[in-house]
Image (cartoon, rainbow, N blue to C red; front, side, top):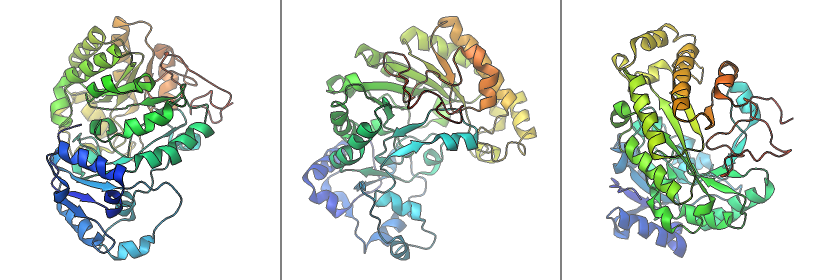
Length: 428
């Protein structure tokens, strides 16, 4: 796992009382040069003090974030949130307590009706989540900029049996599941954490199902000894050298991520990069020409995703971006259309800017590989309408990196239950 140096380490007593969980805690503590003696125990009575201590950690360096060892809630019971909030400092949100108490993890689900309302094109999919917070410091991510804790659910065997297995039984049409966490890069905690092992063991009883990594890291070398690696798909984000160091603190370089992808391929694990997020700094064309050349020189991607930086307002972008860093025409377009893009998920770059960037990158990819599936990630229906012919994929059923139907053979394994993307209002 990543070498972390947590400012503090916390645990609930029930975690330490469970032999499997306590062994897992000890493994992670050893990897961080900590011991069980360093643990601060969380109880109902000490909850307010713990919340205050976590708040006092003002934007620590990514690998200095506190570690909290908790338990994942695997049924529908809930504590008395009002009572718990009354024990905490003023301004504490229920969301903070939901994390600390291991709720909200049961089964994330991307719904068709949600994408219809927000004008995203993706696939309906369920995914698994056992960690909150991230050990990276990516500035375009709110957790990366200001996160102060990493909350790890430790009862993974219970979660695998009570949440993962029922999902695989109930939804046989979904072939691929992201193990993605809540703003977390879960693979960075492996193999000490053991999430892939616990969940992979259940997947091994379903040989036609696959775990998707979805990572910005290069922490894949432990997969050589992973018994279920034939059910792994390696999806990773890839950014240009010019801003990776400045805007993605504590992440591996693009070259290191490509080396990790090549290693996965050597193990028989398919690799699927996403050029994400694309931020058109000055000379971005030359940067991406080099990056794409390196991508095809070192790996054999099954698909390539494209996603211009989005999910934020221009005001948020200004928190970490100097407008002088950007291609001047694009910076001007962002500022001129700020009001029009207010509340639009695909902001802050206007559609015509994103389209111009996508067209350049599609053409550059095709210089190296005329057949690899290319797609735009969580983009609008209008953008798909514009680019469908150039992408050479149907907006209603396309191969992507982490799609629930994109199996390791590089094909779509469609079924009557799921045969269309969320471009369409219904499955049929």
